[in-house]
Length: 238
Image (cartoon, rainbow, N blue to C red):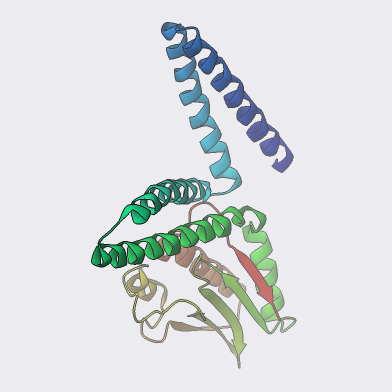
């Protein structure tokens, strides 16, 4: 499946490059009717490629958007730098320098996000893998299971606490208090979480509990953080 998918992505990528070259030739020869046909073919093939990339990496659209934003902002920054050199007003110069610095920070953030999102396709997990790890956890073969769910490095921690299993959310990077609306944390109560402590305690006495935890993982991934596809960025065990 993976190798077939990579082949198709490569095939459609090469097809688009070929079509783009044919389009360019038509424009040079002023054959605009034929150019329109190639433009339509490029649009159709690009949509197919986008779907394939989304299967390979559910965040491929985000990668494209962030790359587009950073490239666009870099173009604006270059123009802005020229205006900065021509500025004669000290007040205007200081204002433009602040704006330039803000643009540089924004470009760096866009590039960092594009890079992080582009890595997600290396960390796909299926239900069987997660259930296997939960089985080891409940048999005390593992102490702690960490699933990193978002680009903000929010961790879902699953660990044994006496005869119970505790699921909790935490992050060394994300400030839950200052960004309460960024994700749908209010939905956590639907799966038993205390929305203040971001924790839930489950009994550990039957096979059903593994399924319950899997449901919680799926709910948090898709509903709270609205991750597309079946990707989880990282998994760590202790």
